[in-house]
Image (cartoon, rainbow, N blue to C red; front, side, top):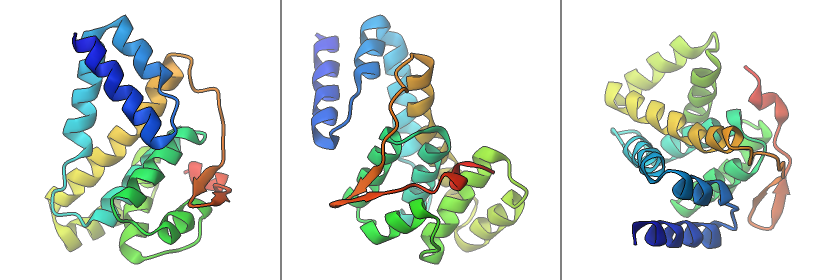
Length: 182
């Protein structure tokens, strides 16, 4: 009964975001325990707010997906950001490498620097702590970490074989591939 419910939830997510979650169905069938642990990690880490403004958290999530993914997970992270109120123009700017609003840019830059262990990580961390405190820093860190988990598990299970452009509204966005580098 639980597997039936989980598959139904996954299908709902697939339909809502136009996303192929075959790897999630496979994981649920292969090991219910593994699926539940994965879902718990995603929910526990990805939803913490910690006083960080929404656009900062959402941008960190986009960065987390971008560092690990070739399109589908970046698409869903972008769709979720827009769904939660981030203007599409900010998402487009982040993905294309065009500077945007200071807060969203800070979250995005922090997410990329964190996952790439970039030289500017200390400066970004200090800026975030000064603006919103250490709890916000932890929330941004967890959002970044959990956003990368989807592409990582897809790759591990042999499902990360599709590259795609990201669509914001009716416009395809060419993601600046230099953003994936450190």
